[in-house]
Image (cartoon, rainbow, N blue to C red; front, top):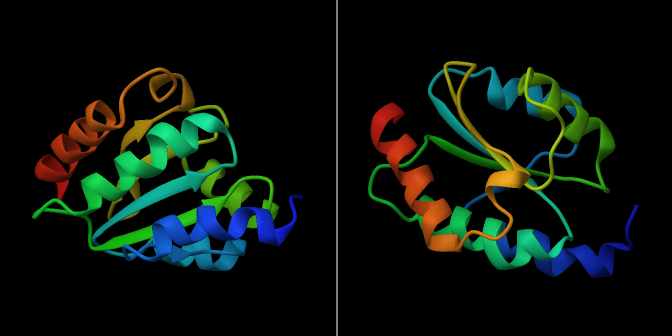
Length: 136
């Protein structure tokens, strides 16, 4: 667990653009298994989350066509929520940061950490926007 004062700005980077924080397994299951499209960002304190993942998530969420719901869980903070989200992302291994798009409770697109590291935020955002255009 990280001190809350350390992660607060990282949380706010997403919540200020409309992401809803999910802090327990029930909230995760209810959100992801709902009807419609749900974009899940597994947030993290790592450098690739700061430089690539969060900026990409913000850019993509501003696209005209975007998911019905934007949610986030924070790795290293709300373990129950993160574990629940990762369980719904199987068979993909745990990864943080990572991003997933669900449609009617089914995983339809995922971006894992290895697809985030070393890639510019705009490239990641373009990938997400392509998925949003297809599924939302």
